[in-house]
Image 1 (cartoon, rainbow, N blue to C red):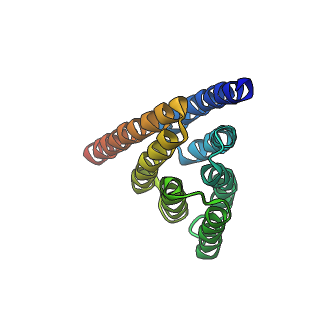
Image 2: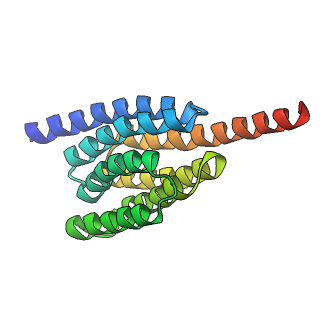
Length: 175
């Protein structure tokens, strides 16, 4: 029981680190900075899910680190996107434990498509939808910090979209 309590506390602590990294990332208006910070945040999420023994979510979070690296070097590469989608499905198939894994799988697939094929506002809207799936996954895993992190990521994404739209309107008005 002590080991379970320590693992749970470590999972919560790691999720708070991921929370801080994600908030800074999604508040950024620059896609390159967003991606770099997301690499570190997803490494923390993978560790958090492993500590909670939510293996599909842990595996997909670890894959997201690779996905971010690939998408930064090879944006809109259909072959790499297909490979990452297949890898996401393979991780889910190998670690599947039941319907509670559906939100993590959905988030991984949405995020892969959004990051490879979109940028700016459309990418952030797709990542907001993926964040809602991650909220469900964190709730099912029992992660208080992860649930809070993904909820705040969703809100931060929406606020950033509004800021980007406002900036585009201002540029249009001021020529």
